[in-house]
Structures are given as C-alpha cells and as structure tokens.
Amino acid sequence: MPKDRFYRLVVTETGSLLAKIRKSCHLTQTDIAKGLGFSEKSGKVFISRLENGKLSNPSLSLVLNYLNVCKVPWDKFFDKLERLINKYREDEIISKISAETHHRKIARDVSKYLHSIETKFSQKKQIKPLSPEQIEKMAINFGRHRVIMEKIEAEVHKRLCARGDVPFILFPFYKDFCRECYSVITKAQKKENTEKFSVTSVVEDKLSQKIERWKKKGLNQEILEDIKAIICQNFNLIIER
Image (cartoon, rainbow, N blue to C red; front, top):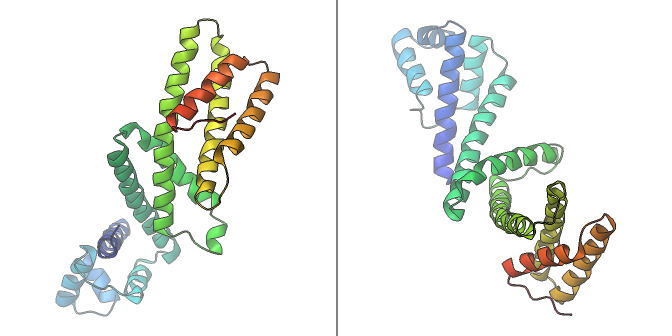
C-alpha cells in the first residue's frame, strides 16, 4: 500500500473510531469540543472534521485528549485501530494474490496464513517487527505455492481414483507424502538462488528418503514414484539418476 494512501487510511479510521467511541459514551461533538477547551461553534466544526478524516495531520496529543474526555483507555483504542488497519491490509493482500493467480478460493487459506504470521511472530515483534512489505511478500509467496499445491493434489487424487485399487482411507497419506515432496523441491529451488550446487542430486536423495519412509508405513512404492513424477513435472524438473 502506498505511503500516502496508508496515511489517509489511518486518518480516516482514527476519526471514524473516535466518533463511534463518542457515541457509545453518549457525548455530542459539542461536549468533546468543550472538554478540549474549544469554543462551542468552532470546536464542533473542528471535531466534525476530525471524525470525518478531514484533518490533514491530527496530532497524537489531540487523540489522547479526545479519549480522556470520553474516559476511554487509550490502549484499547489503539488496539482496535490496529486491528482495523490490519484488516484493510489483509483484504488488499488477498485481492492482489487473487488477481495474480486468478484463484479466488485461495482467500481463506491466505487469511489463515496471515493470522498465523501474526501469532507466530508475536514475540519476535517485540524485538524486530515484520514490516508490512515483508508480510505482504510472505503472503503472496504462500498464495502462489498454495495454488500450485492444489493443482498437484488434484492430479494426485485423480490418479489414485483412476487406479481403482487404492483404499480411500489411504488418500490423505499419499497427499501428505505429496506435500512433503513439494516442500523438498521448493526449499531446494530457494537454496539454489544463493548457492552453487546440483539441485537434482540433492532433491533425488531427499525424495528417495521420503519414499522409503512412507513405504515402511505401508504405502505402495509404485504410487509414491508416480506422485514424485507428477510433482517434478509441475516444476519442469528432471531427476538425474
């Protein structure tokens, strides 16, 4: 979100939230103006401009004094304001991902991921907060990967159904294997961007280990190899033996 647009959003939401608080406290704009030391006529106009987001640069002290007149704790106000702004950011990110991937069903998954980021990094935020740009980049990458993963899982499901000899109860286990293989390849590709090494040999070794592990759990090796091939095809990756 551009800085000027973000600034306008903050100003608008601040005014709107202050107005809601005032009304919940059964106070008029005139009451607030008097509490802030303004004259009745000019003060009411000033408060109206503040609540409608028309003030270009409302100061922090003005907002805090407004809240004091309402006898409302400032920390609750800023918590609500942050949630509102984060919701706008989230909607904008989801809209951007949907437009790029042409996959509107991804919105729910991205929304959950954004909430998980907030939870996962809540303690780290106290040390080094994630910037909105970092959060957006993480969410967009997640959305793209989720679209690819859904496409691969759909192909795997189709192949399993076509065989006719795979118990339906085992489908989730084959899909778990599918996700593990996908993770191996995406991590290897990410690493390739910074290090010089043969991706194919690293991927082959790790995928073979995955196949052996799932074989021991009772899954069919032929099907596991087939799933591995599906994933590699989606990445245009040829595994060298």
